[in-house]
Image (tube, rainbow, N blue to C red; front, side, top):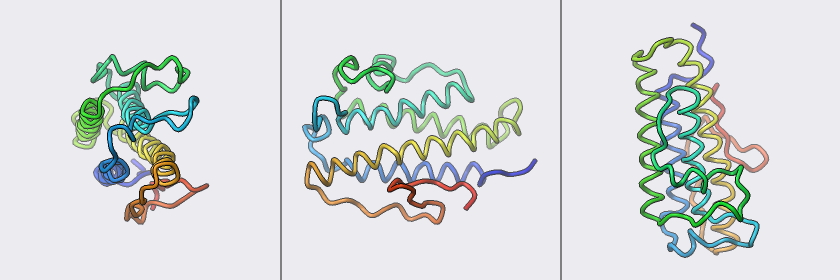
Length: 181
């Protein structure tokens, strides 16, 4: 089989790097800053954090494994298809952290099972998982850009250094994983 991507283990390491960068963007913020909305039609940092995990879960669920939601009550809140005013109240910081952690563990478990060949159609799912992980990573960084802008421009906090990876570049200001590097 032709490899279109880095090995899944390397893509998982890039996923962890993206998650660590996201954590760097919000770990020192006060809960009020995480839940604050810059204006009426704008989402809070906390929404972006939940949305990043929500999308990762749905990609894994829809592309590789039919898993139930780790927190069904958050599905409507974190779905960007729902207009801002209909999303509901954001969860607590602890619940956001737990949700993100659970989703990350599920991503690792499912991709790890694919990489180990513990699934049917291993070659096909390996290709799917490579595309899926790349999309999940790039989606994480897409929302990190917004979080970074609010963090620095609206809240006045410093920005952490970009993650160190030869596989990352910036396109239109956004960090982006190039899976061929």
